[in-house]
Picture (cartoon, rainbow, N blue to C red):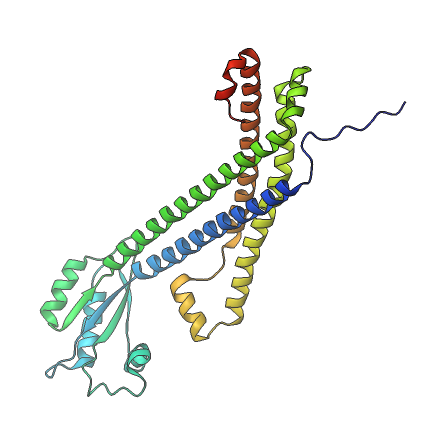
Length: 315
């Protein structure tokens, strides 16, 4: 005698299964893209915050009775006299002209235009100086001087980072919710097409866990295929974007994009996050399918015990 091989309860490949793979792949791609974008923005914001927090700026406005070179040197010496400052740098006319070139063009004449001059002071982040005392001393010695400690910008960057995290978390929750609902409907469709098989197996004594495991295996394969495809596309996107950014470095477009968004690289932790997202999607899909099938079997038992409740049971 030759034993007939057993087949799966749910067909391994059909139109519904292929469509679900595509849907899960899209959901996984969007989830990984959101995760990578949030990670990239947080990293850029942290870099900005660190750079701004390390420096303060003294701005001196030109005046007819002011010796600018002497005032710049005096402002630097006053700032460096405070505990918590490391070094100071006077931004010369050439560097100032380069900073203003995108807006005012080249060939600036500082004698004709009232352009403020800057002194950049590097501070100790862990033990910053007394900014109020420094500001008061500068105002007393050089009335045209203004101290900017960048705290307003730091607060804005922190708020932006927190807002970005909240928005990204919200998008991820929406993606996961849409995926769960999609899996529920797909499981109900597969259950409806194979309901008679489930009922027969359950009637002849098949345990609920056995039937649920069969559906679980089916949707686990689908979810792994879909989430792996979507996650791989997201990882490829970030890798390609990072490669293009590195190959077009020092161009105006790339410099502006880098200044605004940072480097298009999520790093090792980012790729690990993409892998974790893929596994979470697969696990979430499998658990959702199992829960739906177990509920179906409970409905079958409910109808068998009381046929009058058939109308209240969703098919």
